[in-house]
Amino acid sequence: MTSRDEILNLFRTCPDPYISGQKISHLLNISRAAVWKQVKVLRESGFEIEAKHSLGYRLLAAPDLLLAVDIENGLNSRLIGQTVVAFTDTDSTNVQARQLAEAGAIEGTVVVADRQSAGRGRLGRRWESPSGVNLYCSILLHPQIPVQQAPQLTFLSAVAVAETLEKVCHLSVEVKWPNDILVNGAKISGLLNEMNAETDQIHFVILGVGVNLNMLEEQFPEAINYPATSVLLETGKPVDRLMFLRTFLRCLDQYYAEFLQEGFTPIRQRWESYCDMINRQVRVDQGSRSLSGTVIGLDPEGALRLQLDNGKVERILAGDVIPVTEKKDQE
Image (cartoon, rainbow, N blue to C red; front, side, top):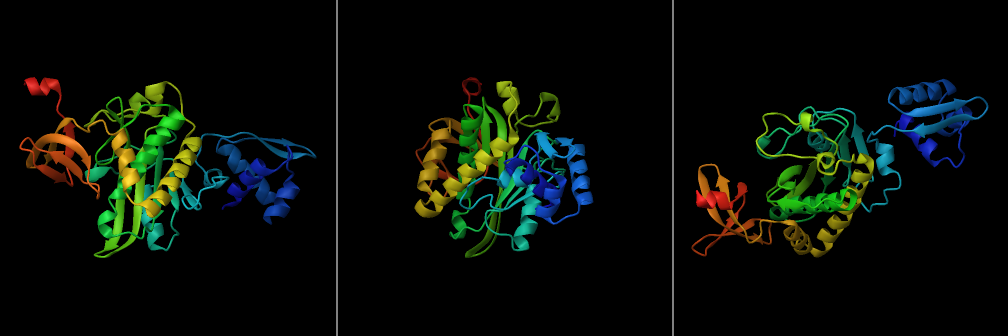
């Protein structure tokens, strides 16, 4: 925790309205000049801090920033979010999480950024990551499970995002296999999970999560190959990013513990309850190959089960799933 974070923590936990510079200096073992300098930095970052002679400092208002001290404070999770690394600007939270994992970071470490310069989605697609509006985070896990079960964690994070959007934003949400969250048919969240493993052992898994929260229509790129939306566009109301993230981390923490104890079945059932494509006709594009059939759910390892017209059930491990509309049927 930096001196700035420690001062913020004191502002938020001190029972008295004001806290003196002398007391901050004593508690943090830094000079009075260092206290003044950090308060100045906080003010320049958008924090409204009142200073009164003989009383000290008081925090009046805070900007919409995702700071490690705020995320960790009172999170009360079992594992996830006990350690948080927050960036104002970074290339990719997944990249940073991988570097931390390789350096020995503990399980449950969360990496969050206000902006990403090189955010990525599935198949190497760019994930637009403007500053100050959305959620970009990555969670480091060390699951003691067989390597072939690692893809199941994608569905775990999808369920946690979907439930958080329902609880915090009161939205009706759908999940799309394998890693998208939709609202009214438009993408509001994407997941990118990455693994480091050998043939028979997982070293670590990184759950990458991006959620469009307060993004405006003009902030979406013009050359986008799928309809996209944000919570603000759907509800007309801005989202408290800190509250959203903390709710999501608690939810993920709960479901990860359940997954380790009870396996994939409870998570699979929840994911299927959010999936609007169950029992619907779809087309699966796999590059040079295309399949049509009816989605009948997930198999025990997370593959999509597609029943073809001849009755055969195909396991889909990769591809873009596109609903077959009545219009296309008529064509």
